[in-house]
Length: 122
Image (cartoon, rainbow, N blue to C red; front, side):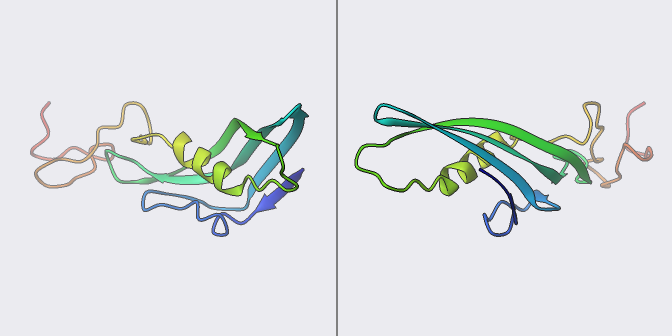
């Protein structure tokens, strides 16, 4: 099963990140005895707020998850909430726009990636 999902429908946005277009979700279900294994791939463009300089930066988001459920006495299986939780768990604790991000000057707030200020040490 594969479908394009509106990120607002799954409530995937936070204050510091949001998907900028529909998210492609693919799920493959496999039943083994009383267990259902679900291999999920999620992909889409995401925009995140840098934890150092506070600039927004876009990137491609792509993750895979493996979920398992008891299939005993179940006719239907809705994995939406678990997929949403896995997406949130895959978000980095602190996103950086680039590895060498200089951040903001703690005194005047100048973005040190763009220019130096009088407070920046040499």
